[in-house]
Length: 305
Picture 1 (cartoon, rainbow, N blue to C red):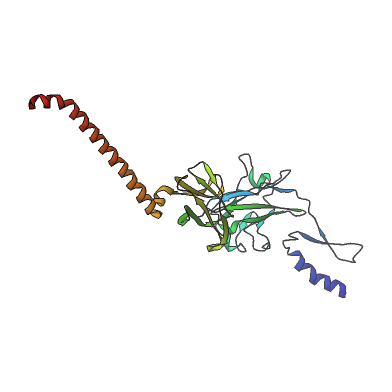
Picture 2: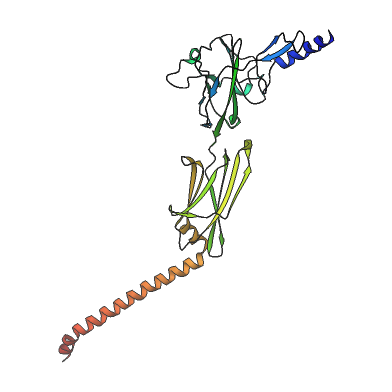
């Protein structure tokens, strides 16, 4: 009797489920343990995407999950939840209704069932895909899809990557010998972005450094710098990006900056140019004067006589 009492106390706590055992538990007779035993049935084939799903900040995505081969799951229990939050699901369907009492507050009014493709029959065809609206950085990571019937259950896990576009790069400059040191900084990225420097849109420039740090809302900040020669470069380009089609770029006019940073050199160059023009003009005037003198000299001498 004492053994039976201890087991009865232990079973309900285990039967509630966890991230490791989100299962339907049943009490049955077993020869090994008199009167009581615990069995788990995991025979429902639940599948989800093989590769991570990518979404952008503020948009909506569909996380596909289905029973294969297909069957009607409209009378089953469906639970979508984040790791370590089995008892506070982001979507909980039971008794043919979506239940919101225990829903994670971070996902209230943001989740619903969706069709994974145009041929899907929804719950009647075993499709329990989740639509998640208004993505934020906290949605990045793993999602568990759990489907349970009277005699069997199944679970699958998938990953969502949320891309957050950061601020436009801010460029600043300082002189370094006869070069211009251009710094590029940007914040608010997720995941960690890449940085590419270019000169005049075509020539890649090797960065002098690349530093990452955490900023507001745990998003990533990046800072980098590169050296440009005013004699070889007209423009500097700094691109910060997550993918080829998702990033930001800023441009700096190296020639305009060099005129401000090296005014003595620019001034000397300007005076030399003006002197050359003035000298050329003087030589032209002298040449014209000599030509006119020689042309008109016979007439002048005749008139004098």
